[in-house]
Length: 120
Image (cartoon, rainbow, N blue to C red; front, side):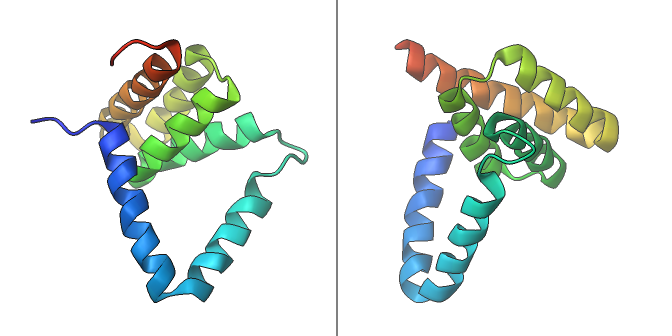
């Protein structure tokens, strides 16, 4: 049985909720850092999320791939933009990054299909 990126992010969010209870100061600090890092500046939010999905591939982090693929869909990124970011991840990370780039591409398609109202 294949797990979808929706399932991965939903499960991870529930697990993070528990951590918020266990270590609230740490999670508040992480949330503050995330908010500061993602706000518009010299780079816009979409560019920052493209960097984040490439780093998610490099780190081989499935929940990260899911969260950043979803964010890119919500920001209106195009499949071509995501593909180019994934190309850079593959270039920098070789074969293992290629395998995760395929997963990240599938995650983007999964969340885009939700927005378009069709099943993945």
